[in-house]
Length: 357
Image (cartoon, rainbow, N blue to C red; front, side, top):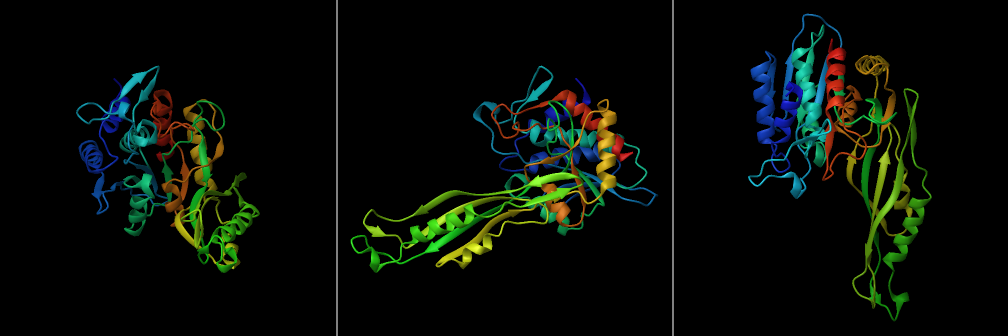
């Protein structure tokens, strides 16, 4: 059994959907046992480590997370551990793709690289629930110049090919609330129908232009859509309130003009979640990361755009130049058959180590 496979299996087997402590303990213990790095466990539960260097220049950090979404019943053993199984050069189990496989590859690259400049490693908590760990780390002084976030970037340019994402979309979730005045439905003119006001707001959202941006020659297109609507209390009562849920996929530097909805009578707007997009701010990092990937897989790999928000958004928002590069393929994470390719994991470890050097 290879060291990479064994470490991935060890990390995947530890449940971390309700409590990340045990998974963080395993990562911290491994770093202290296998490296001479300065290892730190912060108040949020993040595991962070640095290898110092006598040379100046951009510092690089490998960044992952060790929390996972809740498993399917088939992914849990009778004693509560997570099932890990190998078939056809793939490891199956909750967290194999998102993202303990990448964390294992990063740990080994962090240990084995011969860097000329400061090299860091971080595994965050709370990525799956809004990035609490990343937000804490950046307020607690985690500020590498460059970061490689190990979320999935495989299979975008071609099946099985490891790519480098230089941008990803963010997500803003909003609630639009229409206020009206209730009345008996037999006398609708005596009230103010909140559903009608909400319908006007839906039309306004439908007419909004989705934002777009260019990042290092790659086009990023956002979207905005109404996804839920709820209002009314009874068949014979004019509704005095109606709420609309809006899902917006944001792009670097742009947002849809949802504030226009507040100009409509009786409408208010609340932002429930705002996960920032990411744009790589260093063409040197983007180019060097792609060179490392191409060296690891015989010339294949491209700069791509990732549709999903990651912790790279929080780091980029704090001024860290980021790329996303990891083994998960589109549609693989969070599924009952989640898995990761062992051959791509090996390429990831190789690429990470090349970039660190």
